[in-house]
Image 1 (cartoon, one colour):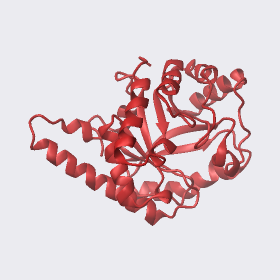
Image 2: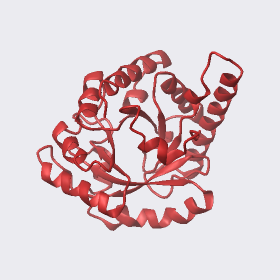
Image 3: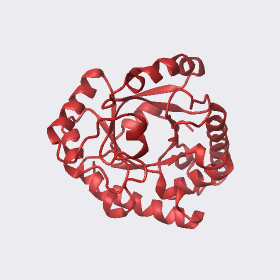
Image 4: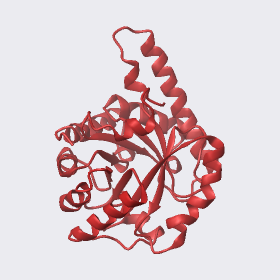
Length: 272
């Protein structure tokens, strides 16, 4: 659901410190389960929903998930409008595509992380999938968020599929060069990714090296499971923190809310 200030302004806004994104993988759950998880995540303080992740999820599954989440958000906004003690703005949380390729698109999304996997060794993820997807996004009217995407060791499935030349935690100058390149390409966002379910998160030093390019909005994901890890990323310069496996592994909605609330507290401990 689009916030009143518009999607790009909302994403780039730093006035609220470091915020949290919940990643929903439509290939791993039904649209109904995905929606319940998205609503619970927002209740716990998540301020954006990413839909995507898997590399082989068809359009119709992605679309059904986006549509169902949007419908649930509309109901929450209506309910809040009828209650003077509730805030409608709490539910104006954007649903943004985080695609594994041009096959995972939906007109029901508010936007898309239109990404270049900058350290991929193959054309497909540098520009190939983008060429396939761009005409559909134009037709759908889905707003593109220009994003540079970097995969760090251990990398996980995304590093393997994307044939990424993984960045190690000590390659500080390389990270800064990538960040400068992203800025000069005109990207507004740089996403630092350790991989889904990674054993380690992107290092503080690497986040700090990217943060030196202050014009970029930094999204950091992969391997973040605790309040302390979220605080480390936030205090190193992250503007947004992404968790996905944390949500999928929760046994019920109460545990999901508790886990996300902890991570949100860690993120908010910084004034990034």
